Amino acid sequence: MRLSPPLPEPPGIAAAVLWLPSRRLDTARAVADGRLDQETADRLGYRALSESPDRAAPEMAVLAAQKALADAGWSGDDLALVVHSWIYHQGHDFWSAPHYVAHGIGARHATPIGVQQTSNGGVAALEAAAARLALDPTVNRCLVTTADRFVEPGFDRWSGDIDVAYGDAATALLLDRDAGPYRLLAIASVSVPEYEVLYRGDDAFTPAPRSAYGTISARRTKLAFRAGGGWPKFVAVLRRSVQRVVLDAIADAGLTPADPRLRYLVLPRLSTGALSQFYGPSVHELALPHTELLDLGRDTGHLGAGDPVANLATLQADDRLAPGEVALFLSAGNGFTWSCVAISHE
Image (cartoon, one colour):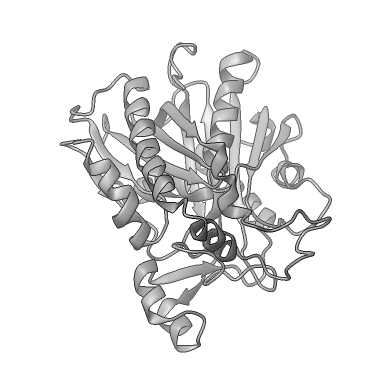
């Protein structure tokens, strides 16, 4: 998705915020407590996971959004669109978390929209906001939020999946038709829907959430898929898809792989095992001579739909991207969809 054209200039990013709860769950403690074994902990590679002991996911989203608005000097009344994304329970069963976020920040004139594309939802939400800017000249400012809280009994953050453990967090990004400290240059995505089965497995459809099992287990469904012999083909598809979205994002941003402005490629906050075995080698084969790979998730875990914005916020907080430089943010969501976002520092 090239942003300019159709827009005269790529949209500005006025603020990017990662809101983390203060509590951390230490991995060594989790091993000592029997939550996972040492071999699994080593492959995961996380030092700690972020945990929200009390705040629900939408409450965290409001806090992230309030911080973003304050950073940009905006108010909720400035927003025409609020797009909220998540992957897990938002605190109520039959209810609109996006409207809660809009209400919580006083976005009285905004249209709240929910986007649920699993862990790629943050990018899908950003794409929805950018498309609205491109199509509707009356829309000038948008908010994109993500938030998740992976608590028991419904979710085992340590052992409920393979090659990923989950941290609680919220993110917020403000998209502006005019300039900002960063610009959204391009978003590239590729989907391979046949792999939705990885998170469905052999399970029958159920009439209500968690009615078959009290605790969600992506580990069970992934093991069922692997037992069917489809894993090697999936890995090949993953690698090709990662390479495609990276190259497409670079091209749509008007750059080439050898451009010295391509400073970083930031990986999703998955396990070090998955990053080193699947994602890292895929990117290295592209020969991006000036681009450093970054893994920023060792002290948080995977943040649901929030990894890409969290990674941008971390780069900004650490002042790592110099003016004129570009960072690529890789994202992946089960189903499967892979995306890459190109963002420049003005």
